[in-house]
Image (spheres, rainbow, N blue to C red):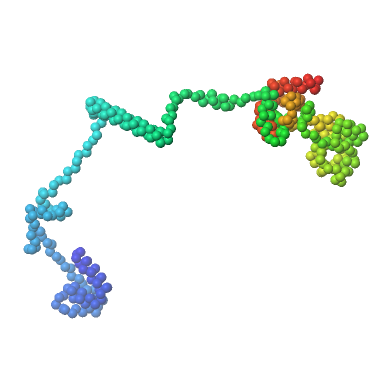
Length: 400
């Protein structure tokens, strides 16, 4: 049946590709060999196909030309040929593979073998160490010959206490007042006359906005700068201001001159009486920051005292970080003069201590540290004890 299907598929393929072979296929595949020119029936009925049967080939039927090969004459056959042969001779040598060698476990070894292995390793290590030392000695000798450098001898290492070194670094030296002034003078190396500045770090409680700290200190030896002061007053108050040393004194005439631009605003501070304040509103836009104010203490009845303090006084005020920055004098001043100026500032700082500050003694709870420095120089911390002594001396000499 399979042969018939194969012939049918071959016929269809060649008839489609080569039409002229159709007649030859008809003759070849026709079931009636007596009619050499078969004609197609006129009817559309399919031509009956007669089944073809084939006798199965028996094993005994062998071709006369085929002879069974001699098993002894297959020396030239390959392994691939012999695998298809039924009665193959036993001439193929079996393939043998080497047995897998398993390393012995440590417990399977004998004591003698272990000792021998250890002795061998020790000898190898000693030999390698000697060779390494020899090579290192040759290298050092070559370096000394080329560079003419003597071999450095390293001293025995000593133990260093790292914690003690850190403590020494963190520990800051606090100076006496006179010693700190000498150091500030020694480090003021600029060409101009630098200012001696004091920086007071207050306690964190002083950062509260309700605790105000502001004032003016009248230093006994001056600040090193001359302030120009203007006073708006009339009558007896104007005369007192002139006697106290005011540079510009006037009433309505001074207001009109400033308004018209005839008087230059080259003064540093302005004071006024209460009677002149309504008239100063006309020139408030010209005065700006110089405008007298009762909160600043520039509107007062005692004009003479205010002018004298302003001439030799230094204003100070705490900032948002609770630090007071103030200039106390020039570096060119004498040491004793600077000490007295600092004593006056410390006394005024203690006098202006806010009343709302609780749990504080004279300095504790109010002042943390005080540093002195020049305008362009480093700072030096000062002991509280020396500052307290300077403040007490100022009180005995100038206040009492």
